[in-house]
Image (cartoon, rainbow over all chains, first blue to last red):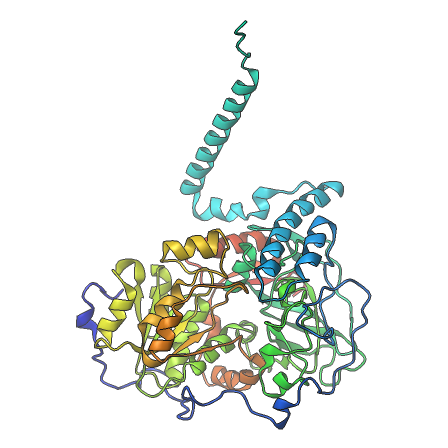
Length: 178
Length: 383
């Protein structure tokens, strides 16, 4: 690595010779300066939403739509329609515009609730989530074993401590002052 | 079929009973996936930072595959074609597609107007399943996909679905002129490739900034650029000013996005409390490091909520900010030629090839930056 502790010594001393860099300068475009637009302007730029639309995908499930759109797009994703409590929150969130925190923060809340719904759904289908595997900890065991063991031991110790404290608190006899 | 299945933040699994995708529209095709990368931006989903990421979503927006079924109106592709599929879905007819802004298509995403449709990237980006699966539905099959030439290595082809086009466009949006000093923030796959592409536009000096030494060493070799670890600098902005005779870099590129490290407040607000659309540390540094009148190019991914940026400095320094999801279809033909001519070698970025069954380990490896990982690729058993 370059020593970056004295940057003044690393001011540009290149010899302006880029022959060692294959392809240097082949994509140069002197017109591409900040004032040069990158899009290809078209006459229909100012004609609004009037292009010839592709065939419309049949709508046979619930797909939430941004209030900033006037219609559904011709094609859309058909996966995972809103459901359960998370779905109720998502529907409410979609009543707000994309410029509102009221749109995005509830969606994040819905995502977290959806995670719990996913666990419940797994259990209902006889699947016990394997958190060790799902979190990819096999890779951690392989490539970062020492730290993984230490972290796991600390987590177990803290968990055991909390559990002990809770049990002790629950079993403690109330003091009778009478 | 076998597919990745998102179960919540930091939890994914390989699901052997995922439903086989169906033709939903006459311009769809079904693709048997041959390669599928895990992208750095997939980690934003994996970490729970993207709103409306529903449990059960199949991630994967960087994939290639073989056409196994076509809709009734597909003309250009046929069963058996091996295709490279851009990460963004585009109709080819709306005013944005006609302007070659294929990442901004208006006929693909019901859920948001601020973003187009992206495979496997939450319902905010259209609610499509992605390609970390054995099979995937590809809408508008005649528009986005490109048939992979016989001479092209599949590992190169999969890197042309996102990494190389995004990096190339990052450099292009920088408006780099001959001799310019370009600073790239982030030495992930996109940042490394951006540094490489900056030379193609005639940069005079390319500098990359990150905090992981193994990535900086890789970038230094691969992209022939100067590489610096911001953890070893008192202040990256002052450092860049010192390197540029106090004026600042001509072009700064944010190739980090919403999970930038390096600033406690941004980390707290953007990554822990989710009170803004990500940590904007890299963008702060880019804005403050660029020369007056310079250009900041942003390809790092941020969430849709508000984010703190030094907008006063943008105004006072007369900075131009250019940002976009890459218009993959627009740039793929020239990038294929660059690969053919040996100017860029995208597959050299791939450090890990994993069977799809080990998707959970792949995500953890990439997220935790273990085993000097740069770019992981998943290979389905049916590939």
